[in-house]
Image (tube, rainbow, N blue to C red; front, side, top):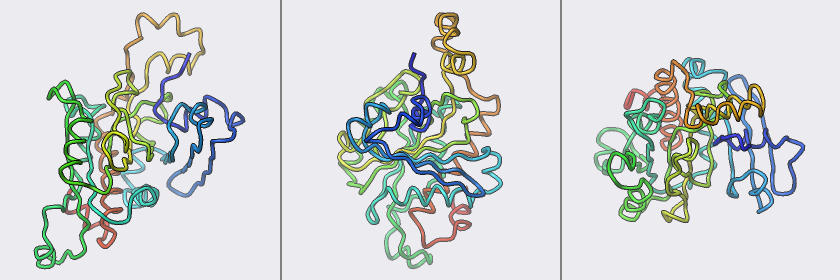
Length: 290
C-alpha cells in the first residue's frame, strides 16, 4: 500500500535512505531553531523513486508551531533564506493563498495571504512620500476552491498571470503528512508547482510553470493525516483491511488545529514578506500586516 503524503522527505523515508540512487541528492543541516533537509530530483530515475517531478524540495522541521510562534522572526528568517534561493531576484511576485477558508485544516493558504504585504498598487511617488523606497511589487489573491465559485483554481491563476505578468507565482496550501508529529510544525518549499487537494485524494488541475507560464514556488504545511495511512504507519499493513471501509475517506487533524493554522500562516507570511522586502525590518513588516 502507498502511504499518502505530500512531503518529499517522507516519501524518501518510506523508500529508505539507502534506496537513494542516481537522480536523488540530499543535504541537511540543523541549527537552534530548525532542521532543514534539501532534496533535489535531477532525472527521471529520481522522479520514479520519489514519485515527484524533477526539482528542489526543501523541508524545514520545527520543534512545534508554538515554539515557532515564540521565535517568529528567527524561524521566518530560516524559511526566507531558502525561499530566496528559489525566486527570481527582480519583478512582480504573485502570492496565491489556496484552500477553503470555511474548513479550518484547509484555511492555511487564505489565512496566510491575508498577512501578505501587497505593494503593486503603491506608485513610486507614494513610496517616497511615505518613506518606503525600493518596494518590490507584490500582489496577492485568495482564489477559493472549485466548490465555492465553480472555477478551477488553476484556471483563475492562469488568467491572473496572463493579465499581470508576474516574474513568479508563490502558492501557499495545506498539505497531508504520514505522521501526526509533523502536523503544523513542518514547512515544505518546492519549485515544481502543486496539485491542490492531492494530499486528501481530491487532486485538482496542476499549477506549475507548464500550466500558468511562469515559475511556481509552492509552500505548504501539513495539517492532516489520512486515517488509513496513520493506522498502517502505527501498527502495520494489517490495519488496512480493517479500516478500508470505515476509515477510507477519514482525515485526522489535531484538536488545536485553529491555533496551528494561525501560527503557521503568520510564520509563512513573515518569511514571504521578509524575502520580498529585504530593505525593511521584520518588525516593521509585521506591524503593517499582523
